[in-house]
Amino acid sequence: MTKTISTMLVLFLLMITLPVWIGLAGACVGIAGALFGMVFGIFGALVGALGSILGAIVHSVGAIFGGVFHPVISVKPLTLLLLILVVVVITRSQGKTVR
Image 1: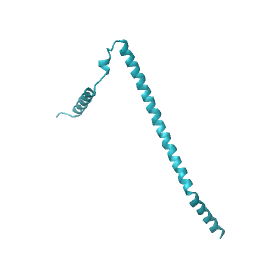
Image 2: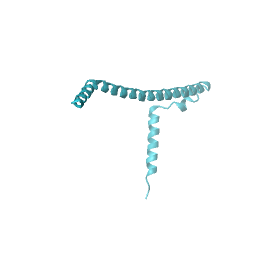
Image 3: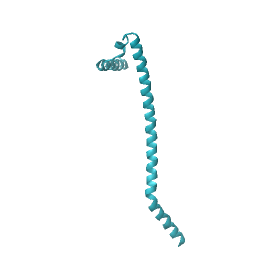
Image 4: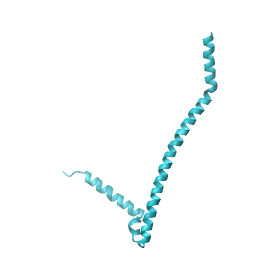
């Protein structure tokens, strides 16, 4: 009889505290997601900082030499697309063997 009452008491406590356990599990998942996002945010910030440093160096070199480097560095989107297309065509044609 005592064992049945203690079992029922444990089940009752589990039923009452179930929302708390679900909330704690959700909080743990949320904290893990936030940490994952923080890692990606730090990585993105480092890439952005590196890009801006390189951009500042290139811009200052271009300003020193009177814009000599600007035609080399500034690539228009259509030129970039054509360059990528040429690279793809060349790599695909090298993969085929001639009989």
